[in-house]
Amino acid sequence: MRIIGRIILILGGIIALLWVSAIIMVVYNSIQLSIYGADVYSTASTNVSSGPKNITVYVPVMLDGNGEIMKMYESPNIIGNLTASVIDSEYGKALKVSGTGGQIEIKEARSHVKNNSTFNFSISMSTLQNKLGQRFDLNRNTIDTAITIDEKKRQWDFNISTWVYSDNEIEDFSFSFKRFGSSSSLELKMHNDTQKLIVEWQVVNLTSRVILWDY
Image (cartoon, rainbow, N blue to C red; front, side, top):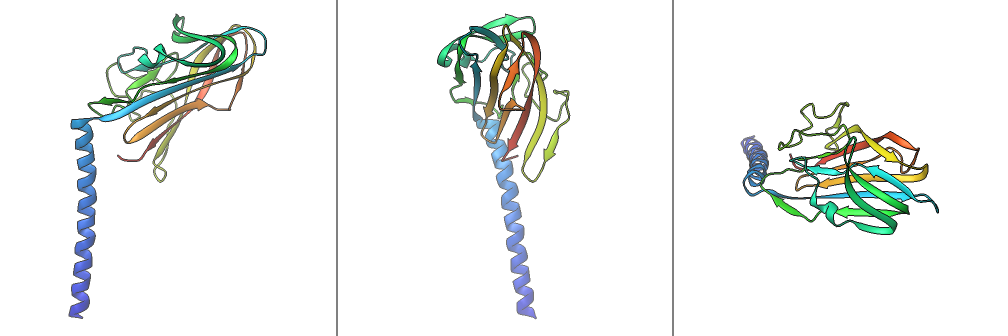
C-alpha cells in the first residue's frame, strides 16, 4: 500500500509539474509578444471576368491601424488585361480595377511589430472597422454582426458587409483578404466562390474566420 501511495504521489507531482510548465509557457509567449513583437503580413486578391467588354469596379482595400492604405497596394501583381489604382470613392478608399478580366494579387512583405497586431487593421467601405491606432479586438463592439465561437477548433466566425461598385454587369467576380500573425490568422472571403455584379453600388457580404493557435 505504501508503494502504491508513493506512486500516486509521484504521478500527482508529475501532472502538477506539467500544468505549471504549460502555464509558464503561455505566460512566456505572451511576454515575448509584448516585448519582442511578432511577424505579420497581409494579402488581398481580386478576380474579374467580363468577356470582351471593358469594365470598371471599385473594391474595398485593407487599411492599417492608423486608417491609411497599406503600402502593399503600391505594387500589385496583375495577371491578365487589368489596371489597378487606389482612389477616393463616395464610400471611402477603394481599389479601382479596369479592363476586360484577370486577377490582381497583392501581398504585404512580412514585417516585425512590437506587439501581436494581427487584428490592427480594417477594411474600407465595410462594417469591419477598428478604432484608429488601436488593436482590433473581437471582444469589443467593432462589428455589427454576431460572432460564433468554436472553442474546440479555436476559431471565431462572423459576417461583414462591404460596398462594391461596377459600371457593367459582370458574370464572374470575387475578392478576398487574409491577415497572418505569429499566433492567429484572419480570412475574409465571399459567401460563394464568385458573384454576379450589377450596374451600380451594391452590398457584397463576406464570411470572416479567425483562427487562434496560441492565446
